[in-house]
Image 1 (cartoon, rainbow, N blue to C red):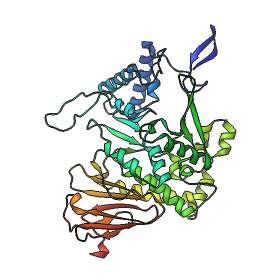
Image 2 (cartoon, rainbow, N blue to C red; image 1 turned 180 degrees about the vertical axis):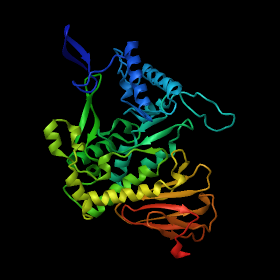
Image 3 (tube, rainbow, N blue to C red; image 1 turned 135 degrees about the vertical axis):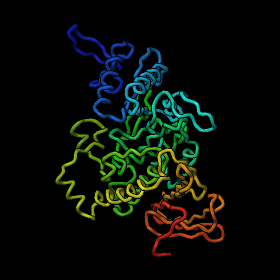
Image 4 (tube, rainbow, N blue to C red; image 1 turned 180 degrees about the horizontal axis):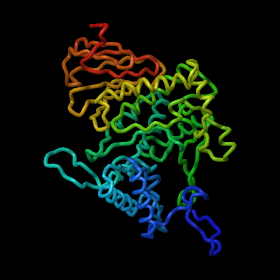
Length: 419
């Protein structure tokens, strides 16, 4: 939209895509682009290893279009990537584009370097990482319905086009939970159900104005913990399990996980923050009081303490497993719609982890045929989360998962106590 501002030459109207206090830059002026590149090189000189191009899809404006994801926007990313390749090749580019999945993945760019075999080419000419915006609404839908089918079908289609690229997986941020990336993946009724659940749990829905003057839902404004759990009907143990199960899905997937600071503590809706600022997004931006946070974390009975200790345990396990390398292969396993089931293997395919997350509040039974894993039918499995061993029988590994239980089963190992 255009916003009037006072300048030394009188009132002028300037383009403000997001809000009246954020004036867009005119990248059609070469000097603007050169100045921004100079600033990015300054960051690189000071040690930046990643540069996040925020809302880069809106960088170019053209009257008569949506001014979103225009070819010129991709050209700007290519220019920045090209400069970094020459001047600071250690710096990676990550694009943040809250758009449907098929548009989002185009920001990996076009092929630059071929290989001599059938392997993937090394690089594209745009971002090394792109924000995986579709993951958040799909995970909310999964726990809203206690059904992982839509999520599993989508994950089965995922691939990155280049060896030196990866998805940046996240399900919470300082902004709301975008719904545009759910288009084509969830039905209108399923999206409406997410909106209804958000409002029931004390959040709100933000709308955008379309080119024809109509409005459509843009994002959900709520903390992730309260999007998953009703603050008016607290069941602490179950709420914490459900929340950590959502995080375990993100941590299991190929790519790089992005963890919002409030997810480390299971933050609840900050309605007073919204009242103070008048902005819906403030519900998920509460400022911490260090003494209060310390008290909450030191009390093992609080949600904050249970979430961070559970999260630290998962991260501690994950960092030691080559199968969770960002580029390590992944494959959906056909088990049970109430259990998200994923097979991860390390780059050399010598380590294998079966990731199982119960997305329901009831016990779920599954069985996995060993021949579907292409390994010995007698090999044991060690659950890295519980340190419990499981052994196949009659060509199957059969398991029971409790309410929102997480299992990371490492093939070929068993607990020392059971040997």
